[in-house]
Amino acid sequence: MDAHVSTSLAPQDPAYEARVRESFSRQSHMATLGAEIVFLAPGEVHLAFPFAARFCQQNGFMHAGAIASVADSANGYAAYSLAPPDTDVLAVEFKVNLLAPARGAGFLACGRVLRAGRTLTVCQADVFTTGEKERTLIATMLSTVIVRPRSRGTATNRES
Image (cartoon, rainbow, N blue to C red):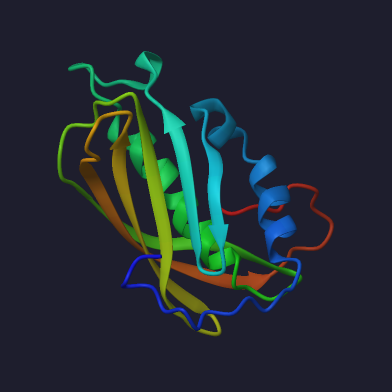
C-alpha cells in the first residue's frame, strides 16, 4: 500500500467490495476502454486498461480524455469503497496533470482516498504505463467526490 494512504480507512458497508464491483460492471464507458478492476481495498482502487489505437490522439498517444476517464473512475470507486450503503458518489471537481506522453502496452490508474469526509471525499489517482521494465508515471489527478443518497427509481446508479 502507498505510504500516503491511511491504513485506518474503514468501509462503512461490509459489502463494499461486491457493491463496487457491481457498480463498475455497469460502466459502459470503462468497458469500451477495456478497463478492469485489478485491485480493490478500502479507500483504494486500481484500474488497468490496454493501449488501443482507436483511443489515440493525432500523435499516437492515448488521448488525455481516455486517461482522465479512467483516473476519474479509479478515484470515484476508491471513494465509493468507503461510502455508506444506499449512497452513490459523483465527481464534483478534478484536476489532471499530464506528466509524460501516454504510450505503453497498457496503463494502470491507482486511485486512493486522501481524506474521507461525511459529504466530500478528496482522492488522488496516479496513472502509470505498464508492460515495460519500469513503470512511468504519466498523469496524476486530484479530485473531490461527493457522497450522496442513492436516487430511487433509477436502474443505472453509478459513479461519474
